[in-house]
Length: 112
Length: 109
Image (cartoon, rainbow over the protein chains, first blue to last red):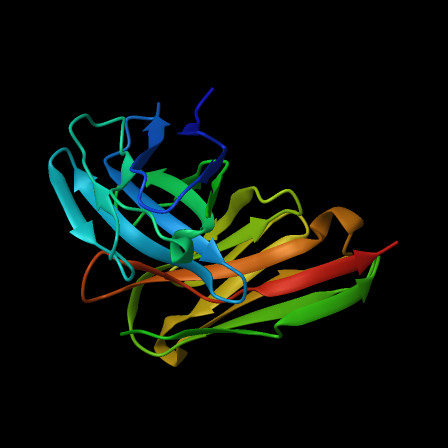
């Protein structure tokens, strides 16, 4: 089944404790992206990747890192999480940047 | 950067009614997509529609790129249509995706 998977789905952590949210797709998509969703703000893009080893900032990259060492995986790294990073996070992928995007199930993160 | 505005912000319909959701954008775009987020949080793509008109069952969408807006039509609404509808655009200046704040739809049985 073609899908985008994210892990974990739910995470509670404390300020400053490094964490990684994984994202994987099995559709051989080149373009992958991370978003955060906050009430009243819609989805805001954090980072995107055009292909392996090619990443670029979205609108809200501060406090986040990404890597794209393999085509199928695009992990989101929070080196030192803070409470303002409490949010619902989505990973998405598409064949290319100007193609239909397919979303993962979301990861709900709470930073205390 | 490009601004994306959706209207109305909230909409309540009786089952069977029709509705039109609007997405305005402030600059030229390379693409435009409509998504539905169901009450469980899952995001589903509805249309990839940088221009023209597309239909899928009870849903259809029209994008008039030269006038910088897109419309999503829902006919004969059902309770399962409830959720939040987002439009998302990619500006011509790069590969970022910008979402609108969404239209929250509730369909009453």
